[in-house]
Length: 273
Image (cartoon, rainbow, N blue to C red; front, top):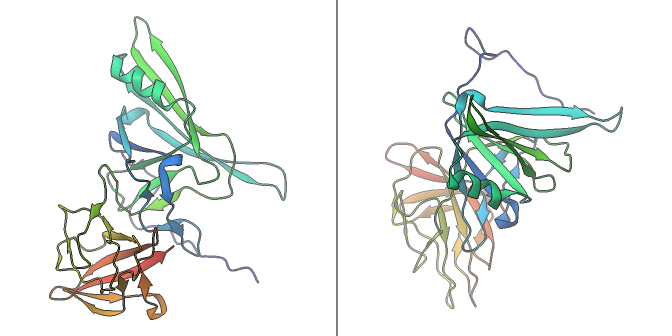
């Protein structure tokens, strides 16, 4: 039986109106991604954070917001439809830094993440098996000096662009010294749980992130790894899928969403790998 979904017109007088984009776009080299966020059963919402390899980070570039265009196109014959993701925009100027950016990203498989000024999520274009590649052109004449940049898929996909509510990563994950550590904006969204010879329960000593933010724990293993169990853990209540304990094995990952109920703080599992 077909398990479809309904769509009801969004509230507001002009749901098809343009949504202004931010002037900063984020880009990730696909080869730097250690763990990709899973998608939920409906295939679009991404459940968790990107986890990057050691020493890797995301990058940013400035663009001309009025020239930004993200599009999808369905191609193929009946019974062979695929979707092609594409992001087009312009980068002003012809500086050394602009040209170095274009040189560095040519031929690199990439994921492009951007947001608008009215949504509560970001959009991720490109997928694990069908990333984007940069195809730039330039203009330098009496009308303008600028670069026209196009990020296109070489391979195709059946996935729509992802709705990403996770973190943007521009620094190394916070490496905890023990299984008890503070979760706050200074330490960020990603936490490396230390390797242990004698197991201990993961027990946050502080919870200062806001409602809806996503926290990622990354295991380091050890002879007797740390564990995260359902119930009270330090200053938070933990709710795990089916109540199943998570063990911080080497490179194991769990994503949890913050739920702030006032006096009570919760970490609710989104996905694990």
